[in-house]
Every structure is written in structure tokens, then in C-alpha cells.
Image (cartoon, rainbow, N blue to C red):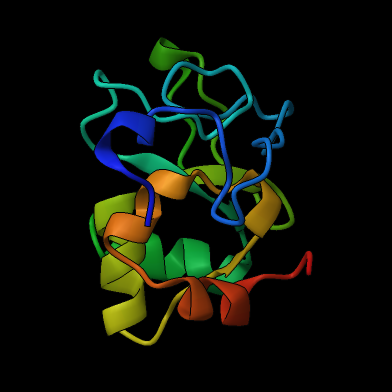
Length: 128
């Protein structure tokens, strides 16, 4: 687990430089394409997921509608096959519900290690 002073460094859960998650659609708390975590990112948008139709349907029912376009926010909606930075709370809930998505571990910020162990993340990883 990262030390508090290292919490905001741009490192993935493996301790390596954080890779981009998605540039199309542009994801991340600041829409930079990265799941970077900063003090402003209170929801901890740290986990780079691979969106499937099943996960998007589950997420919508769970109260986190990622697939419905919101033009007023310049958001086209996440489509199956795309990557997205998911908030820590929804990611943890998806694990508890048995609906955790696959993730891109190299693009998942180390901050999630405060809540989810590395072995669980490795089991969900599709880029190891």
C-alpha cells in the first residue's frame, strides 16, 4: 500500500508509471485520459475498467449510469468495449455484488490499494 505522502504520485497499483486509460472517450476526473488521483478527486476515480454491456447495465441499475449520453456535459456515454475511470466506491460495490469489471491494471492508480488488495486487482486484470 502506498504511503500517505506518495498517495498522489502518478503510479499504478504495481508501482510503475500510470498509463493512460482512455483518450476516446476522454476519461478521468479531469478528463485527461488518466485515472490520476488528486485531493480534488474525492470519489477516487482510480480504476481503469473495460466496459462490457453487462457491466454498463449493472452500473446503471446500481445508480452509476455511465452509458446514457449527457450532451449538456459533453458526455457521449460509455459504450461496450471502451475504457473508463471508475470511482472507487462503485468499484468496491461491484466487487461485493459479484459484478466487478475487468480492469487495465497498468492504468489503475495506486490509491485504490487503500480499499482493494492487489491480488483481487490482479485477478480482474486483462493486461497482465
